[in-house]
Amino acid sequence: MLAPRDLQYLLDILISAKLALNYVSRSSWSSFVEDVQLQDSVIRRLEVIGEAERRLSERTRVSLSRIPFIMMRNRIIHEYDKIVLEVVWDTVQQDLPTLIESLEKVLPHQEPEEQSYY
Image (cartoon, rainbow, N blue to C red):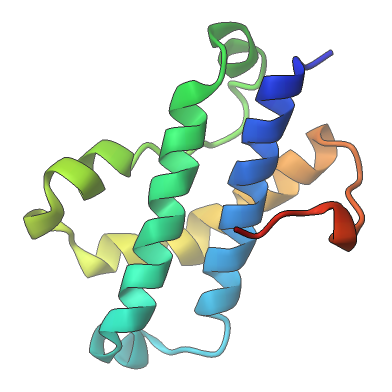
């Protein structure tokens, strides 16, 4: 059983992953490269994912080790001038769908009106 705080952090990760994927759903690589606002939106969601993961209890992190969390937060925040857009794009396209699928198996079903998309 997950602690309520961990449950909220996992929900935050799920919501941010879905938002980031949705942001780029109608974009091509070339349009992503040209759209700084889109880049900023996606990078922000990856920051939230990384921060929420960092806040998970060690117990939850260990028990969910099979879930491919993304640890980009520190690089994005502390090395903002070295962000490689190809890595951001590939993370969203390749890693987030798997992350979403994995979390949806672990988290209780949430009705849309119960979700906070801050």
